[in-house]
Image (cartoon, rainbow, N blue to C red; front, side, top):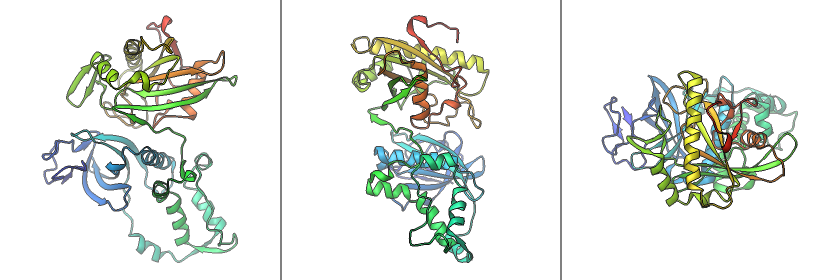
Length: 408
């Protein structure tokens, strides 16, 4: 059995498990080329749908944000923050987080997805009836803290205290402990979405969620600080969510079976008003990245060549934008996450075409240091510097336009 997760598919169920594409709507049945959805577990909570998916005959849990919420910036941010929190959990009773990604249907719907380990356990009602023991509140809080590293707790606004009516020295049933865990994690997204309350605005990370501008994902200006306390502001634009670098190429981009040049992308970006979206930067930084696999030195060279191609595109796009005075390259090198597989994306923008806008706020600010501070402390989406071979402090270098060469 294969199940199509396109929310508007007229016939999503397919008994032939070997089909690569849905016969009804044409959407891929293999998500990221590795996950095949086989059954629906739940679609009743109003926030997301939960499926069982197979990865090479190993069952996984697939959670998909409801399609009607995919353009709600707060809902997407909550979903991404939930994924970030789950990534940090390390406990034998909590399913291991396998990854976050975006899936695009044949008709262009973007679905936000996360994958987790599937653990077979008794039904909740049965489990709770089996748990007759009691614990002190202090023990309960200590137990809850085992699920989350201290740095995650400090960044989040999760209340690790049981209800005030329960005295510190009073024993509480395990059902209350489980309820506290459920409310802290599983239900917090739904509460925040329903109430739009500011106190739920941050769950686990300070990562930015994108503002959708046509086919552009835009991340507004955030401050970065250099080692002397001087600051600059940086915004980020993923130039198309539809098109990404063609595997192995440094000048062609791809969307499913369609391949276009950067010149064609330029026309699309002009139509969408990229000059106005970037909000008057003083500099444009063109980012280069390469996929995992192969020789790291070769991949780093490819990433540099991609950055040069993006800079050529940026100079053409912003040639008549008065605020833009100069350009830089940023070669991040090769994507090197531990579970990375060649030609498969583990993060949202692993093969995307990206530019960064700069607005210096302090005279003499060191741009490299301030930009790295911004990307580490105010990251965008699921981007992480440590995933890239040139993301370390000593290798993180921007190259001013006038000194661009092939030596990085």
